[in-house]
Length: 568
Image 1 (cartoon, rainbow, N blue to C red):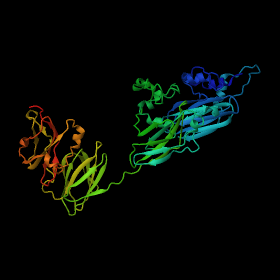
Image 2: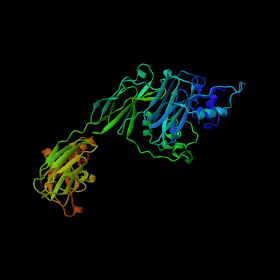
Image 3: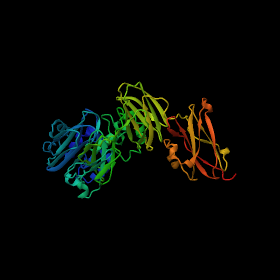
Image 4: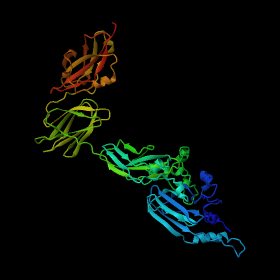
């Protein structure tokens, strides 16, 4: 009599050059075989009760086999597509009955039995086409040789297969609750809060699980395997073996599958041998994020973009088997940014504007009369900010502004101008802005490129300090102020003093040193010095210089801290 397993062995002989025992759950060596991944090397046998990962080339079918030895055996087969739809079917081929040659008890020639199995068309039990995780379940299956055939017509891809004859006791995939939907419980401009019902695997079966949340802008995912395929940024992900080349269905670390040894084999991945694959495909980085959060079933996703649609998926993974099940994903669009009120600018009038950190402000300028040009005066009081100007929707200007800037824009009859101011990441921005169609004298004073105050250390005394600053070719009024500060006066305090839009009118009269007019047609000689007297020995003073323009608007130079000598 020929055991059934010999029939299957002869059928698989072209796939493997060495003999091996088929792993069934009735064999005592099953657990040892599962632990020994090399046992299934170069094999198309599906082991009972273990998930395998494998690879498909486009338009190249692959077949797997497993055997059920007894009638009325429960059977469950699960196929998980990873990054492409699959076509697969499960069929049953009855094994040839055991017969004796001429009553001698000798078996029929094995080659004849193998040919008989191959030639006979099996009975198709189930077929499926798509990218869902699909199952075949039967509570009572006949004995025989089962064949699983898979095909990918879209692209090269990989997949997972799990088959078992003890589905009731195995339960490797975490169970979903009666309502497997993911709900959006809170929606904001940059945040979305998700909630879902807990898996019975944790609450009833007391098995260790963890939830993983996946966020992306493209679509929902039907398996964690598909997510990992998208996340794999390594070019080696698509480095697959040539058809016909023997490889282990367990050892797919080289092809981008999760593996504990992946980091150790990085050197192998960086310089792949040309013999190992057709060629390597470079995958673009995908805007997708996976966050595993333990056993919590509520999670808030933050740092999202306003008015953007996102897709959210939740997967529950068994910490022991590392196998997962997908909840029914959802999607949501974050709320729009609060609509900004547009500030109307009046011709020739200075307007103060405050812009929040990373915020934006919109200004509108609509000249009453026809005009040939528009002049914009902008005085950025603190940090730099970005300005954009559109005329009737057409972009005229886009650049960063720091200090005082003047822009000339070409006019157009009945044109309207929309100005967008965007704050930076460091902090809030303040500015003064003036738009006019009739510029005469500058509304703001002109400034040199360098607005620092220079202190002369050698000229310091116990009661005075000598400083200098640059001027311009335009005759302006300069006023200098002093204020005593503590010795531990730091940069943060100094930065708060740097608001260039605060004029002399905000200072105490006792802090004023003097005012004077100054200019020079020769910029190299446009330097003025001043000695501040009446200071106390060993004290620190904050010095400020204001330049005041013809329109009465002032600009402050960069503040300077000086310290008088303690002993003279």
